[in-house]
Amino acid sequence: MEKCVERPRCFCSLQGAIDVVGNIWRAIPILHASPGCSDQASVGTNLYYLGGYHGLPSSNAYEKEVVFGGTKRLEETIKGSLEVMDGDLYAVLTGCSMGINGDDVEMALEPFADSEYPIVSIDTAGFRGDAYVGYQFALLALLKKVAKKTKTEPLTVNLYGQPCCTDNTIRGDFEEIKRLLGRIGVKVNNFFLNKKGIDQLKNAGNAALNINVSPWLGKNIDVYMKANFGIETLTFNGWPVGPEDVAFFLRTVADKLNEKHEGAVDEKLLKKVIKEEGDYVYEYLDSLMGTFERHRFVLIGESAKILGLARFLVNIHGHIPLALICTDTVPVKFRQGIIDEVQKLDCSRKADVYFEYDTYEIARIAKTYKGKATLLMGSSYEKKLAPELEVFFFVITSNPDLDHKILNKSHIGTRGCITLIEDLYNHY
Image (cartoon, rainbow, N blue to C red; front, side, top):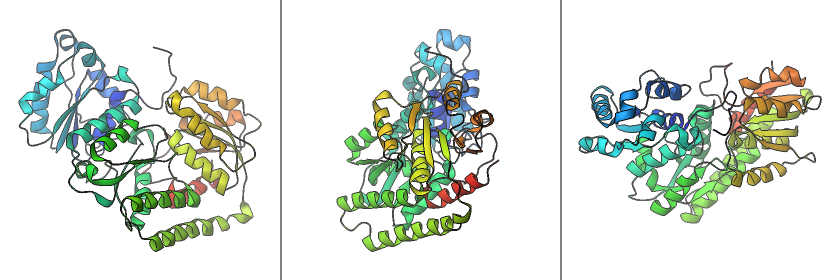
């Protein structure tokens, strides 16, 4: 182990895989792992179909299975799951102990080859990486299992790049993106947190375009979709936040779809929607002119989220960026691209960019801005840090949020940026 991490914001790859499968309606994760791994990896996933982490089937492997193999135990677990768990798609997810002992999971699946429902095995042993790794492994495995190509649908896109368990506003984020694209006639396969998830997975091969909202995550999926279905990927540096981002997002998607299928998105409709969405935001912003507050801020969170937030806060709302701390485990080869995006912010004061997921180290970095920052934005972990920095205001914008129950709240798009402004002005 390279080092111990204080209060990680996500867990191992098993958690990421559970999060993927469990947030697809009528998809059942079957865990081939020890009881401790099964329980801990399920924490925080808030599964969509099963309603939480208390009903997951698991082989609950103990010393006997670790030493002598747990294939037979797994077969029994799969058989029981098919009988008891009412689903349309099943995925066997491997934990550390069973990954180490080398159980042949594919062999355990052979007796169920004639099952009317797809069953896939995914090697998600925790030592392979964190939840982001598990997200990539699991989503790719499901697409390989069920995605088919029949006929390209010119106005259908696949949306991915954001694990549900690492975004406290993911439901609202999906709703906003689907609303915006729906206004220009584009249908979205987002796979998670909707009752058509399995159908969307099956239909993924018919999409005209992939949209990846992460500057680094899901590259294996990009490659697979291009190689097997000929679908190109548009990668955005973070979620679109605010009228300018939304206009760029909609315009880019429309241009790419029209490039593949001429006239797919109506140009007049596109311009109308962009104008209406922009007018919606600026009308609300005009009402704040008499009470406008400009802050020097430190922003902490996942790169996909804080890039969009920073663009809105600086380019549209006029705040001054001091530092952006990316809490996701961005590989070194993608970091310069994120730094370059931050340097494009329309402010003479160029923000410092850090990549750190250890809560202790994040606090240490943030404290160097004591006396300079007036606004701190982050997770509940940073709540107690705000008084130490002597900032005027603190706002929760990232995972984990232990202070609120969130249903469909969002900080992205046009409606979401209005909610963000409300949170900024209704601080505590």
